[in-house]
Length: 159
Image (cartoon, rainbow, N blue to C red; front, side):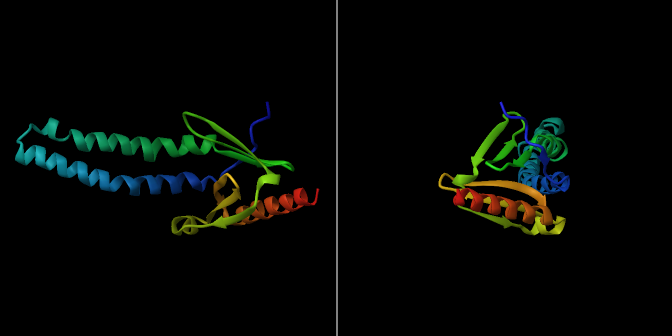
């Protein structure tokens, strides 16, 4: 069995994931607040019961914003080897993907608005089976990773 990949994502990934998770939870929190209001004012439930939807969503926010980004970052690793790209990710179920360089057709970097704000980029490399990515690398490192994969795939083509 191969050793675990050595490279980690940029630590700023944790902050970015916290923000995106929080933004994703805001509509659910608004819905829970509306449900609590209806339970309290329309159905006339006691306050502890009416507050349950909001409390459940707040507990979920603590999990998704406070805990999961750190766990996800700790597990996410990658390594570019002369013959393959090795990806490891997952919190509960760990996924390990080995992508042979000979199968990679092209490689890109992409950057969303929040990534740009944090100076992060994602490297995406494509095979016939579909895309794989290494997210949340600092933009200069992402460019280096993209160029290294491109260089190694050219060497594979020459063999």
